[in-house]
Image: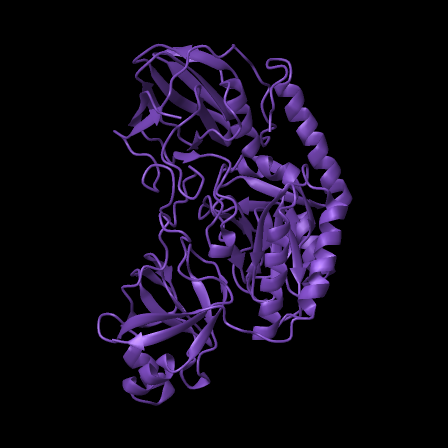
Length: 321
Length: 205
């Protein structure tokens, strides 16, 4: 796809990055996956804009950006609940809306959630793919725009399209009162931890430390004592794993995680609940409830049905995933 | 993600089994499987649960793991020579390593360059290979407080592991030298110079 227009970043916000579905297939070479923290909202935003799910969106964090598109186009924003204005007029998140050439879309006050996804109709943000993906990985400076977060004055290639059908989605469940409860299955080293650690994990609210980022959330709370003293040998890890270093805070691995880790993993946040976890901000609280693998699969199917239901009525007959 | 564990030891034969299983699973190109990643003694299988026939994947893993478990020998698929400028600004920890090991810096260099190392796995950042095993006489522990910035190309030791930092990152390994070899280039095919199961020989410049 060739870019025919540009999206100009007037103000970048706190941390805005280009993300598609992630850089899969290269982890054996140590290449992290990256991709959206909240995959559900990324998919919904693309759907509303009439894009395929793998189109690149802009993930905005806590404080959103100010952007201008140089042509009439449809945009959509999903995820965290921000006040949004287009040249001063309120627009709603969870809808697709048209902007005219040169109008400014501005993210204002954030009411709940942490991350929102801005989709541009016509195929999304068309930065050059690196190893098959446009996702930004900040630590390895890969993908996105020059491997970094967006800055004021940046210009992103897009192919504006003004013809997407107006659409609306209810959006994802956001943390309520800065608190989210997610389900976990035992991790590969789940049995390295005794009942006391599991009780601490599942009966306490952990605070998401200010030292959290796209790689992972550091969790402030009671210690999770190990029943075994030895160190684990480094092994492949995935998003949602809860690593427990021998000293220091447990870490919930998120989108920019490394491909492998050497700390024992007590648990794994189930796929169905990762989008909710992604909407936590530093200072928010996370609680863990233990569940079985079977329940995890059932929860994922239920979540997918719920997402499909939000996407189905407006675009019949289109693939959604 | 599913993790398949072999005996939890760092050992060339066990590592070869993990690489063998990983290669076999990847070659099957099973629907829903997004990435197959070998570790020291385990394999991570990343899959989309909504698009994966789980019983079929489990059967494939069981069958391939049985074949992999019969691997008894290791052979490095190829050996890369990596030129290294040891010491000075290129290896700011070389003298401290020599002191900690009670030998001369020349001995550290000689011992580090004497072995052909096995690439056990990649991780940490793109193209970072965990190489082993280092001569126990120069196996120094990593820094307690990592450096904020380790320059790209730095060659370090951490216990019996050694490796090259492909890009500038924070890092805690003891830096003894530096190479100008490009370890990772996304525009190259393959992007990573090294792959698990290959060999590395460091050549003092």
